[in-house]
Image (tube, rainbow, N blue to C red; front, top):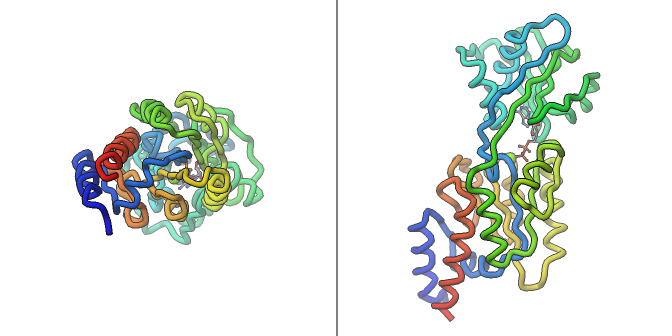
Length: 288
Ligand code: ADP
Ligand code: MG
């Protein structure tokens, strides 16, 4: 049976905008040893902004942005949304066909008769497109049209105001290892990691690599210690399910994440996780 005090704890958490799906998870939050974070939408705002459009050959910037926006209008990835927003014109989705989103890589589709490929360097390599890697600051979308490299679009995201405080608070509450996992490129990941004072950063991961990383981390914790993973649910639901405690940031509202998560943060503030740990500690004192 569940000690009555847990109901009080769950209630206290919910007043703080934290949904805990059971007394066992609240109890487990006391013993957090490893904190694992997704980057985009979790530690960063997840609302990218287009900062550069660079073309090669005889395509204009407007045309490159247009073709890219037409393809990205079929994706709900935060990067895709930023391109559609920047384009800011009506999109006739009827002229787009054969849309295929490739998780951790990008997306491809036909726009009228043109084959348009939009994604990261990994996607270009996979499709054998010869292109020049950009060193611009931000996440980079490379675009190929009919198998020829046509240019790139640079987008950048911002670290959430609350993220640094969240990491600091969690460390003060006894978390031994703070880790960020991301599909984004290494340069972006490293700069976010430094800014936030994270212990470890692993970049350029595919969704299955994130799962493997978590499996590995689980092997290296103490018997009592718990691992949580926080994500926004965009292709990280398997990791949310595998962690001792899966935490979804509900602010962005990925339904699948909210379903599989053990704890849902109703706002988009990562420091609420520290609040949840504090509630857990207070509850343990009352219950036992
Ligand atoms: P994160 O770990 O940061 O949440 P994802 O696994 O969602 O990242 O995506 C990893 C990378 O794959 C992105 O940084 C981007 O380079 C590329 N990518 C994924 N989806 C798209 C898309 N719709 N358009 C362009 N690039 C994409
Ligand atoms: Mg993600």
